[in-house]
Image 1 (cartoon, rainbow, N blue to C red):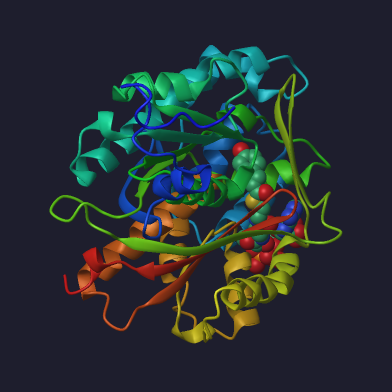
Image 2 (cartoon, rainbow, N blue to C red):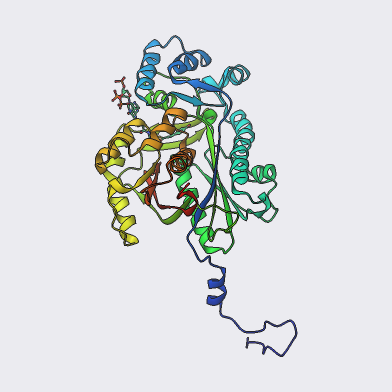
Length: 405
Ligand SMILES: CC(C)(COP(=O)(O)OP(=O)(O)OC[C@H]1O[C@@H](n2cnc3c(N)ncnc32)[C@H](O)[C@@H]1OP(=O)(O)O)[C@@H](O)C(=O)NCCC(=O)NCCSC(=O)/C=C/c1ccc(O)cc1
């Protein structure tokens, strides 16, 4: 069809513009930036040194003392002091079938998590929105990441309604990314923010171990290791480009993001919903596998943007999948023992909350930067890992909202 001359009709566009120009006008000018962070946890807190007693009591497994001792040994070496969770005595009394993974319980689990997980995400998101300082109706996109979401319409819809987001908010659910869900969601938020001028993306990650909580079994060490490490929590981040001067405070600029799959690692970490709850496997060699891959991921990412980085000069937001993962990554990169202090603190206070954890780490880093004025800090790396084995890398720069506080 020939273009309509501008004078032909009052409703015609004033000038013919190409789709390239339309596209360019839709893009943001600056990089995606973290503008606010919020976190939340369920009420029940279990000290790590009481966890073995709690777990063997509520699952009625006291007849397996060797496994209880093994759980105690792992808890002692975990670097964790306490964890928060939805599972408590009341839940287990109401659902004794949760203790036995061979009984059918998925429906009951999904019924509970499809309510409590979005509610927890709403609590974290409300904190992020309050800190952000703009109305919830200014959120244009919502990314909800959880491995508890196996229902439609899903937790994203409930979350949007609990927060009073506008009906035209663009919703996406990410599921079963496990421990790299937070990294994946932030990376997607970066793409959305940079490609949609004025977009404000709410990333909400929320996980509950209730979907995967069952009693111990002789010969299944995965259950014991999971019981030693995992906790429940939610983290929310607001991401947008071109911050509005007087209102929005740039915390971290997202300069580059990438994903890599570790070769020959398919079976190392697995998750699958089954009739008795979510089944999972955590291979013994995961810390070594990650330590062997991490430097390549970082070098490729910094290489792609032409920045010569020295690992010792960076700040770190690394997913604390387990204490040994942090130890081996520090060693592989030749870092000081304090380099992962924010990750270790989150591990100590909350355990491994799967995809949510890296948002807690980012929040802890922010707290540390505010406390010391972000002196000397410039570039950093956020890294998250999970099934695949997948490594998410996001290169960060300290934002102006954190400098000179
Ligand atoms: C703190 C650990 C667990 C133990 O510390 P350590 O310094 O290695 O100590 P040890 O070498 O003495 O090991 C203590 C015990 O733990 C056992 N162990 C050591 N890793 C293992 C192992 N992957 N398997 C099963 N036994 C082990 C090890 O065999 C040993 O057993 P035992 O000799 O009987 O005392 C440490 O190994 C560690 O940090 N491991 C990293 C764990 C890890 O790979 N995490 C990343 C994956 S997280 C993930 O996939 C999440 C999935 C998920 C799924 C469901 C959810 O609800 C939520 C999330």
